Length: 385
Image (cartoon, rainbow, N blue to C red):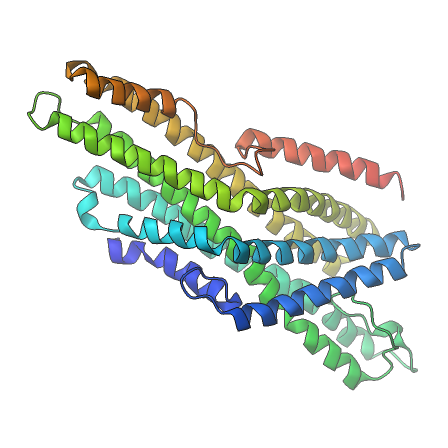
């Protein structure tokens, strides 16, 4: 794998986000407005139907399973649009790192490519599983309708079940009308898939890239030669690189702070609802609905686990960098450079973290806390049944 192949991860992110008109370098106000209007209007109709049938607890669960995800998609692509300038700066900044000359040893090149490969794996898996789950969820009512229509007689709207529970102010009594509305909701499938997974993929790509740069910097600090005349120059370069990484992390945390807060709250509720639907469908013997609920819950859980994993790697690599600065031969330098190294050591001892609006820190430990919270919500929810 070379640098030309490594930069493909940015190209893949570009393809997904350009579809929604929110790629930082090639924004389209028209495309974004069109898709945002479709998803936001559908979300409003879903909530309208929730209010209309608020007395039906089973229907409330079904509705919230959809409405929370659609709300998440609206918020995520909306926040991407609002933070487009800082995202533009971040992506433009990291493009300079895809240069072979920056990695003058095979070890440093392999470190960079390792994190790049992780990003690619996550992008391919996330887009694939999200798209599959969305299509499966969309197709399930139509499959049930086709299977039951052979034995269905009479003229009733009861058999016309839509994938998204939107509020319709008329009865569906004819097949052509049913298929027309069903096709309209099909437009939401790529919007939900790209809006939910595509925004996550860029965050994971940028964070893992930051982890890779810290790991490469730590390797450079560990292998700096202290008895050469160029030692002060090398230290100056490493301090500048460290300052750039900190600046990049601040931009990343600023751009995704409220994005992650929305995702955290929504994902916790969605995992709870998904587990409840799995238990309910298993008890009633509805195999098709059970499989859909499993893929639905699995997708959201993997996304949340991905956030926790990259948050853990970010903290680990930043602490390794602190050790690398401490172990270098800073004691042979002049007092000015000793002060610079001391500052780097102190700053690196405060780990870089991925937070949800400074309210929650993503790590593997916090992931288990979220799962426990979802179980608590589930136990409360079951008391209402």
